[in-house]
Length: 382
Image (cartoon, rainbow, N blue to C red):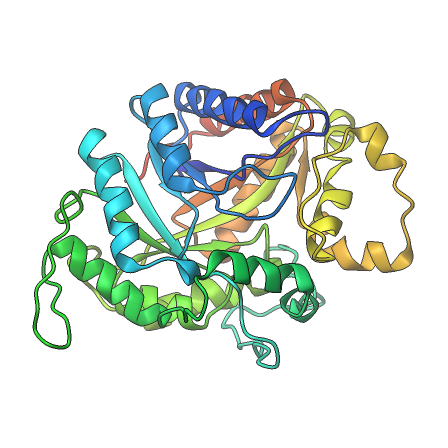
């Protein structure tokens, strides 16, 4: 259990009272610190129309961050393919790789979610979950329904603004096939016409698929023999079906001879449990703003968060996320991360941390790195 690399997932959060430019500068600064602390990867998420999140274009932020760092792997967690083409994605990351060769992870995800009226049915898992816990005690909360988000006017507006008028997103599996073919230089149109992307073809990028369940994303990753990232921090109820589904679909490839999984967690670390809980106070209102389809608010101060008039409906809406956020001293959070790794069999862990004050966020990553190293864990992938 000594080789459990840690990486960072950054949403580029905007704290209340700050600007998007402030958030971007803080994220680049945090990436520089993460590199010094020894973290294996630093990924940027893509989100749109959220006042409290400045991470709208992973490729742009990755280019800026690559120029400010030198060794840490950088990646997208994830590029949302629902409003992109395979060509534009390969071109963007081809440009990045041309300037900073061999440093990028191309994490690919779907956007827009499952269409309304087509809810995903829970999939069975080999790992038993009894009274909401795995055999080693990891909490697997009740399943959260995203139906109200998919039917919201804001989500519809987002799709309208991201897609060209009349455009239809390409089938996700077909799009992954096209990306892999363009990277490999083997793309042929149905009419037999070749396409060669410069720069892009032959780019030394590591392709990952990100998914929340054991459905299409897990199947695409497994059947193509690609690396897979599951998000306990967003959908804790389905993390087991996601990783187990991926492994069940896996076929060896030129990229991997066996499955390779990363699992994410939301953490806040401080010198003691009480301080960490104080720093994490804003998480509940922030998650609520996302799950009500209002769009992520600017991350509040603890004082602003405590002033929020909570209702029973509010608490029910975010309880699974609050219960599965790892908050506390370095030892407490490291114990929980080891529990997550053991329950999921993850090859790597990816952590995301949001606090109102940037120095607290940097300190959280520093304290966890020190504890992780003290326990003898390797930071770099084997």
